[in-house]
Picture (spheres, rainbow, N blue to C red):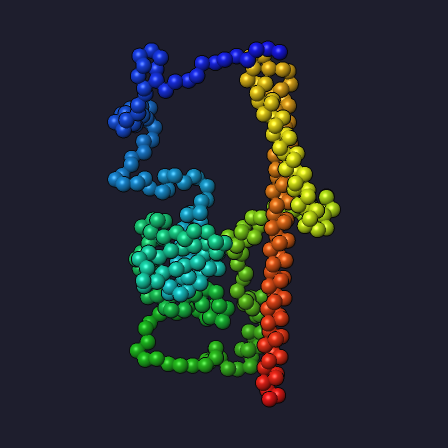
Length: 331
C-alpha cells in the first residue's frame, strides 16, 4: 500500500514576509474605480449607484419575476376599475390580495398562495398608493363608479358607454333595461344569449399563483404513492420498519464513501476509487430521497388519524349535548 502524502498545512500569513492579507474598504473603492474606468475605455455600461441602496430592478433578471408579475397585475387592474374596491376585486381575480388600512402606513400586495406581502412602493413610484389613487380618480371622472361592471358584468356591457356626468339628484330604479319593456326586445336578448353574442356570465379567469401552489408538491405526493405501491405498505409500522432499514443502509454506504474519500487523498489512489465514490453518492442520494418520502408518509398518516380522532370526539360531544337538550325539552 502506498504511503500517505503529508502536505504542508496552509497558513493565514505569507511565508515570504510573514504579513497577513487584509482587505480594506478603500481597496474595494479603488478596485471599483479601476473597473469603471476600463468599462468606459471599452465602451461598456457602468452601473451608477445612487445614494442609499441599489434599486431592486438592477438585481432582477430579464425574465418575469415576482415583482414584474405584480406590476402587470396592477396595470391590468387600473385599466378596468375606477374604485379601490373594484381594484382589489380585479387583483384578487388575478391571484393577489390587496390590503390598505387607515392604521397602516403602507399598502401591501400579497399572493393568495401564501407568499410574503410586498409594499407597493417597492415596485416603483408609479405603483405607490398616491399614484394609484390618482389613476383611479381619473377613471372615476371618465367612466363613473360602474367602470368595473362595464368591463365584466354582461348586464351593463349591453349598453353603450355614455359620457359620465355627475347627477344633481339621486334616483332609484329597479331592474334593468327599464327603458325597454317590450316582449320583442326581451326575445331579442334571449336569442343573443343563445347565439353567444352576449355572454351569459363573465369568462373564467385562471388564478395562476394558486394553481402553482397546488402543483408545487405534486412530485412529492407521486413519490409517496410510488413508494407505497412498490413496497406494498399497509400499516404505519411497516413504513417505520422500512425507514429503520434505510437508515442502516445509508450509514453503511456513508462509511464506505468515507473510506473511498480517504483513499483518494493518497499519493497513488487505487484504480476505480473515484467511480466507486460517485456511485456511492448516487446510491446515498436515492436512499435519502426514499427515506424522506417514508417520513412524509408517516407524518400524513399520523396527522390524518389525529384529525379523525378529533372529529369523532366532536361528534360524541354534539350527541351528548343533543341528548341533554332533548331531556330538558321533555322536562
